[in-house]
Image (cartoon, rainbow, N blue to C red; front, top):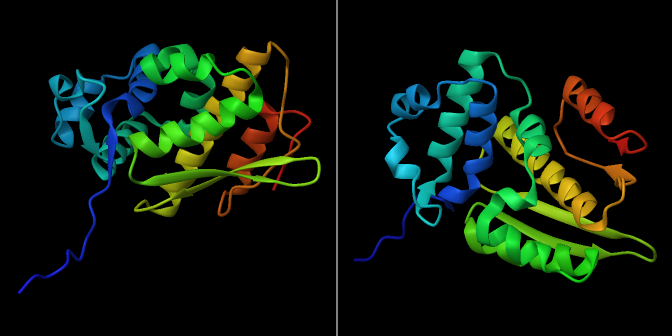
Length: 193
């Protein structure tokens, strides 16, 4: 008799890890050491289209951050990431005709490269909200994931529009006060809830 799986393994494409690897490399973190520690090899990350279990990606990121004393990797890697670093994904986003088109396309593309997250837009009278749900991660990993996605989105909009744009309000449930303060310092004029 057929038994449905009791546990779902969520995947992302290796391309999703590239900004974290680039950030670690830029500050001298020995990434190969931490990859091997969690059962990955650098060769497994050569093809940006290859799938990797999301939990393993975060296991690597957390191992490196814990050993190297890095707080808020999502914020740091997100700030250091440009849309140009994202290969095909970035090229498609850069071809967007407006911020609205960019956000709509970004939601569709990220939903296609990761089975652990879902992005969507909601519209108000004079606002557009970018919403995100992340599945299969603990609270701390979810918060870091939100920070990374948020900063990449803000950087990309600013690069594309050539303006110093900031969102008016950001809400990330469960985010600690220290992390909220660091985020507020990076985004002056934004209310961080």
